[in-house]
Structures are given as structure tokens and as C-alpha cells.
Image (cartoon, rainbow, N blue to C red; front, side):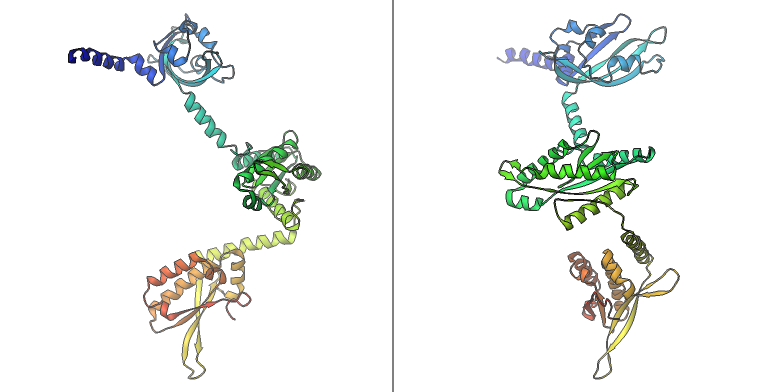
Length: 455
């Protein structure tokens, strides 16, 4: 039995080492193409890899071309005959990817990657080519899926935010170039949180998808729809005047409001709220368009959901925002350049007139050397969300001072924004733990918003 088993094992080994078997197992088939005679010779595994019953049908370049999908943008012929290059004796490499229509019905897509080299004849033109063809249908499908998901939203099938922004940028560029106009709408599905709570996230997704379909059904030719965020869509409207913007909004509002959405859990009523902006009339960059559309949407929501508001410039508001930008820059610069200072004001006991502790007063030194009191800075910093950074710096300065003067006790004013922020408290606690003896001599005083530093 041992002798009988040996030939069988040897046969299995030989089969495993067969070059054609190896190539077939990894989806590769070699070929040699004599271009002058159009003869195409394939490896023994061609029928298996290329899913062609009669290999003689692909025995010529012309016969092989008959299996090519007409939608191909490039083929082996293009890669060899039209790619250019010059053969200096070692051949010229080429690589391309294309689709064959094979299988029993002759319609099954088979994507292949074609790698090879062509060799020149006496006239310098390609006379012969050889290489290998690899079946890559699964890889191609995965790449196509990734490409699709990089630009389109899986739930609605519409453009995702990145693709929508690119489309908006192109529309704005065209409008600026040809002195035209375009519009952009930010559309929010109303009460999505209530729908989630009442029916579940699955139903909310059904509602979002249904709203997307209804919006698309009322769009003009050439306008583009995308999903901007979880409950928001964006619509890019080309050649759009302010009047066109209003008419489009009326169509969209009616499309969603006029009928309930049929879901797996029953009918759900929903509405949308819209903010829009005309460009370049009221915005000359993509960032401005998005900001103004969002602002208009917020205004519409605050006024009455299920309505549309178009952006209108507000001179006073724009001036305030410009001033906020300047104030933010000044505060951040002062922090970075360490121009936050601490002044100490003694607090004495009424009984013995002894100094009980010192109150720490924050000051900012301007770039010109002048000093600004906290009352001129803290309210603005609180409004802009920067006060916690200032409080961090003040605590840092106070802790350093307490380390140098062991007999001093201090009171520090801290903003309510910092008091209510767990992250601020974590950083504050870590700083004090690293400086033993400091915490016992520090009093935190809740700063009054109306009188930031009691002065």
C-alpha cells in the first residue's frame, strides 16, 4: 500500500507544480501576439481564466476584440499601438485595464488587467507583444464601490458633502467667469429628533431618503442635489436669480408637505425648512455661500419651521462679526505672546486691619505697552468662547506666584464657562496636584457676568 500511495502523491505534487495550474489558480493567463499576422497565442489555461469555451475564437487580435465591452475607454490595442515610446531592444512595457463580455451568455462582464511588453519591427512600429492577463473583476467592483462611496451618500444615493461642495465651487466659478448667477439652498428635515424618538432610527432614515426623492422630483434640469449632513440636503441651482430661488423653495416645500411618508412602521408626516442664498450677489466664495445659507436656515427655523428665508445682508451684523474676528485675533495673540498679567489687590479684615488675602486681577498688556482691564476683555472673551483659555493662563500665573511666595493667600475670579466645564476642572486639578501646598492658599471666586472682576 505504501508503494501504491507514492505515485499518487507524486502525481499530486506534479499537478501542484504545473505552471498552467499555478497561473489559473491566481487568475493569470499568458499570451503572445504577432501583430504583423494578427496571431494571438494563449496559455493552456485561457479558457478557464477568460471564461471562453472555444479558445480558437480569440486566436487573433480581431477575434479577441470581438469580446471587448463597447464601453471600454482603453484596450490592449490602444496601449500597444497608440501609447508611443521607442523600443531599444528590450521592448516597451504597457499596462491597461478593460472589460470583456464572456460567459455562457456572452454578456457577463469580466474585468482584466493586461500587463506586457511590445517589441518593434524594422520600421520601429510594434510587431509583437507578449504579456499576461489577470482576472480582476472582484477588485474592480471593490474599487468602483469605493469610488462611488467617496462621492455619493449610501442612504439617499445623492452626492455626499464633498462632492456637493465641489459642484457648488464649479457653479460659482462659472457664474463669476461669465457674469451669471447661481443659488444654493440648505434644506433641513424638521423634527428629526422627534421622529427618531417616536419611531426609531430606521424610520428616520426612511424619511430622509423619501425627502431626497421628493426634492429631486421637483428640481430643474441642471440643478444638483446632495446630502450635506445627517438631516440636511444642499441644492445647487445654476442660472438662478433671487426670484428663481423663491420659486424653487415653494416647489420643494410643497413636495414634502403635501403627503405623508409611508414607512415600515406606518405613515409619518414631515416638513422641511429652507435657507438660501444667491451668488455671487450675496456671496463670492463657497465658504460665504455655506455660511449665509446656514444663517438663513437658522433664521427660518427660529421664525417658523416649514418655511423659506433667503439671505439678506445685515450691515450692522457684518460689522459686529468683523469686530469679533479682530477681537479674537487680539486675545489669541495676547495669550500666545504671554501678555496676560496679574495684579494683586489686598483684602483686609475689618477687625484688625490685617491682610486676609489678595484678590488677583487680570490685565492684558497691549502690543504698544498700554494695559487693559479685565472689564474690557472678559465679556467679549465669554461671548467668543475664549474665556476658558484666559482662565487657564490666569491660574497658571497665580500658581507660579504662590510657589514663590509661600505665605500668600489669593482669591481668583473664574468665569461660569470654566466652572461648568469638566475638562477645565481636570486641567485645573492636574496643575494643582503638581504643585503641593498651592491649593490650600487659593480661593476660587465665581465671576459675575455683569461685573466680571468686581471693578
